[in-house]
Amino acid sequence: MILYKYQGTGNDFVMIDNRLQAFPKENTALIEKLCDRRFGIGADGLILLENDETTNFKMVYYNSDGNQSSMCGNGGRCLVAFAKKLNIINNEATFIAIDGLHHATINENEIVSLQMKNVSEVKIHDNYIFLNTGSPHHVQFVDDLSNFDVKKEGAKIRYSYLYGKPGSNVNFVNQISENEFSIRTYERGVEDETLSCGTGATATAIAVKAIGKTNSNNIIINVQGGKLEVSFDEENGIFTNVFLKGPAEFVFEVNYEFN
Ligand SMILES: N[C@@H](CCC[C@H](N)C(=O)O)C(=O)O
Image 1 (cartoon, rainbow, N blue to C red):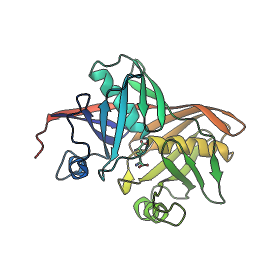
Image 2: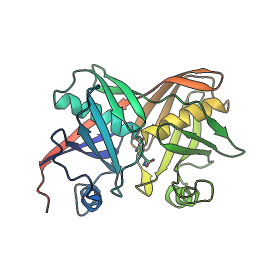
Image 3: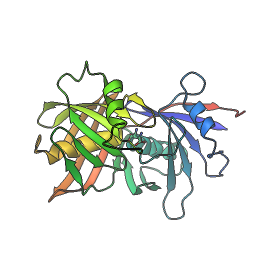
């Protein structure tokens, strides 16, 4: 089977064209092995592109631990680029994912802009914010982001009483200017820091607006693997027309034999 590797600001994925349902998707150990950086191809997650009756395709997302999970923003952007490579779409797509319908466009520089779900609930606490942008996200400001132990502190929060068994992704944030922020993210299901998280960047942009750290509706989010842009409309605490924009790049393809 031909497997493809894509990355979006360093968040990397194994992509599989599963329109013929040939991939053994119940095989958690196989998915985990394919994502393993020593024994497999290596990735933060694995994504199946499948047929859908009413949209261009369906996205099925697995974390690198082999388990199916909630929405992946960077993965969704990479899947749109993959659908273009497979000639399923040209520069526009509508697809279905676990959190509902998504629209996306690809511009002349191959930058993918993906519409994310509307957000109507932002829980603001004394020193953190929690919201769901397709996946659950804890957002917390820290003083020295570069030297922060994201894996250790992220794991503490992810497994804390705050989020119980399902857990949460955890974003640590620093403000750079009125509309620019830097984040580092601990991802559940990878159980480590990743170089970028699209739903995390989206959650951070909405959170900083919700708590008044910015007046902008167009926010740059620096991640460890590059730059993402998040824009939205806001009315009475409801965030609509939420778009996540950034590069989504093909890395390589390989003919892989399962055993
Ligand atoms: N990397 C992703 C988020 C993937 C899902 C997450 N690990 C979870 O299980 O909640 C992104 O780009 O959004």
